[in-house]
Structures are given as structure tokens and as C-alpha cells.
Image (cartoon, rainbow, N blue to C red; front, side, top):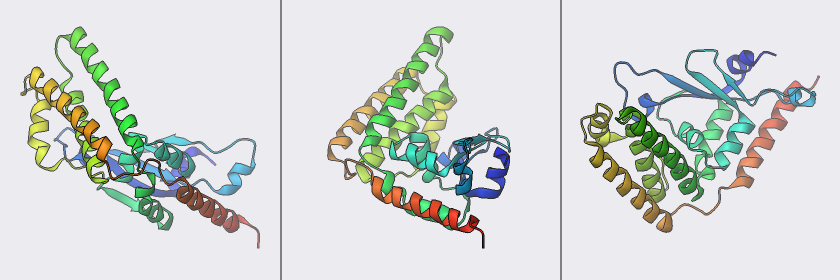
Length: 231
């Protein structure tokens, strides 16, 4: 079975991500599609295992095999958690809907370390670009502000809404380079401090509900094996 066939025939969940999901799309924005496919259980009985992810077949499309997706989500991977909370769901079968119902099981205070660690890496690249180019990469600065706002609100409320809502105009002004860099830096610093404060008071549990997710994955794998069994 070709990787493209897994995406075409076995996708359980598909959504739109990127600027369109964040409410920051402009006329030139791409449509970034993300998805989850369930490789049939018998494929794991061979020496050659199915892929953990597939790039394509559509432009700007990327999909993960369900187990890999769950493993990354349990480690509070920002891209994966945001994928689970996209407001632009294009497809979900019964397994996909059950995966979405598990969204809270993946959330924990670990998001503070993963989101802020990712933000720190982005900030270092921004600073390097500033030194090299003499000007910030404004689009990257906008998305860093969005990320910091998201993790702050997640830690405060236990929920991860992706659409930036009322912050749209302000963030797009950053993207256009209309906000002075010192003001953007101050905004980033303030959000980082607010996220740290929220971490100590967060309603999120210390750890994700790994057992609940594992039970789901076991049940789905078992059902797939039973469907493939000869009659």
C-alpha cells in the first residue's frame, strides 16, 4: 500500500491549520491541511511498518498515523495540540470524532514547557534574522505573539481556542511592520511573564491522561484487526 493510499482511504480526521485556523488569513494565505490516518492493523504484522507520517498528496497537506499523532499529543507537541483544536474541521469519521472527544485527555501543565520552549526557539531565530537582515521577520513575530497568547490562555482556562478574535487587527499590524520592534519585544516579554504566572495557577492536570488515550488506541487497533480477519 502506497503512503498516498493511506491518506486517501484511511483518514479519520482532517482539518485546516495555519493562518486560516488562527483567524489571521489574508488574500495571499495558503491553505494548510493536516490530518490523521489509521493504518490497518495487519500492516504492522510485517517487517516493513506503515509510515508514521505522509507529506501530501495535496499541496500543503501533511498527515500523521494515529499512534504517532497520539504519542506527540501526549508529549504536548504544540503543532499537534493545535491541530486537535482547529475550528476548521473538514472530515471526521467515528474514530476521528472519538479522537476529538479525547482532546482534554492530552492537555496538561506540560504545555508550558513545550509551548514556551518552541517560542524561545522562534525568538532566537527572530533575533538572528534581525542581526543578519537588520529588520525583523514580521510574519514570524506575529505568529510568535499568537503562540504566546495561546499558551497563556490555555494555562489560565484549560481551553485552547485557536482563533485570535479581537487581537486580529493588532497582530496583522505587526505582520505589516506597523508596530515598532521595541513595542513588539515588550509585548512578547509581557506575554511570557503572564504565561509563567498562569502556569502556577493553572487548572490543567500535572500529566495527561495517558491510560485513557492508550485504551482508545488499543480499541481502535483491535477493531481494525477484526475487520481484516477472514470470515
